[in-house]
Image (cartoon, rainbow, N blue to C red; front, top):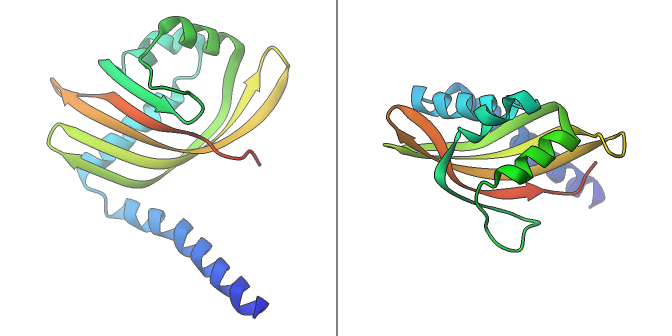
Length: 154
């Protein structure tokens, strides 16, 4: 019984890891564009890149992280503080689904990042899942909403 359960769990984990990779090969040009947008946003980790990162969000953006009691909008002071005290050293995103409907799109993904806390002088591994909702205006994708957050650290 334990062997059968172990084999079943390993099969489910393998399928869960392989399916997103197979899906990536079949993505349309629009879906690849959304993924490239997301990868660019994740790459903007330095304080001098703050303006560029904020510009990737729509002025009417509303997001809701798991650890926040209510949704919130872009508040520059919080971003400035975060960029000042934290530095993302390494990151990866693993998209599970990307859907594009005209000028709207969403992407569901798992993320994993190593973040250096400059105040404590220590690194932390952050894992979680996220959904970003994008709107395209004048040929440019911007995030108009999102939801997600960190899961247990490993």
